[in-house]
Length: 250
Image (spheres, one colour):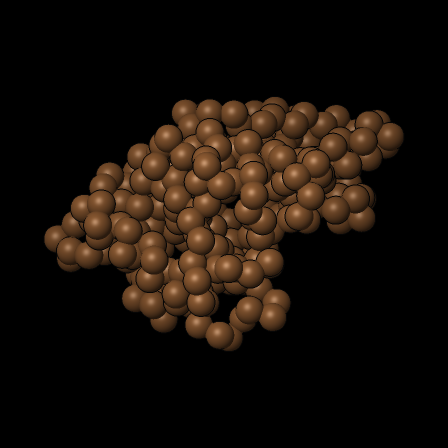
């Protein structure tokens, strides 16, 4: 399988795997804009030469949009192989690319966000453990920071203390999100509209810089929903699912 590295030079021609192919779609345009701004931070996006969800995205941990301390590590934003591409060794192929690049850059290891049980938009801890990753740290309610070290003497990465128990002071619904995932560009406005129609307090806060994301109130900066100060979910919600949460919480 041929591996394509997406760069500033070819990003407009390449399908980025996890949204529809048209560059005019808000999901695609927002994701490609986010990627283009991160390439100078060392972000690497590699995909199998297919049209579908079969890619890996990673960045030096000091530039990761995640509130962690992981000096000298590489951080995987997303490793996604789905549908017809599962079970063909593509996850291993893409992860091996990341390992090779990380070693080549002199990194101490790799770190990735996971969860205690299978959770939407978070990496599968069972697969990671199978590949030699170990648990570095945890944060409520289910987050796990997994790491693969190239040197056993290397200190473990860890979550910042501010996200060990996700909590905010603002009342009502508060959503922290970024355009790291293309789906937020479509679904955030949808639930904003629902909240307005139902008269429910709702504040959407988009992270636009690395610094903002690294000081987030929860580990998953792509999408973290709170209600009356308490963490609710990291799942990017459809209109139906958000309406169900309103019914439960309000």
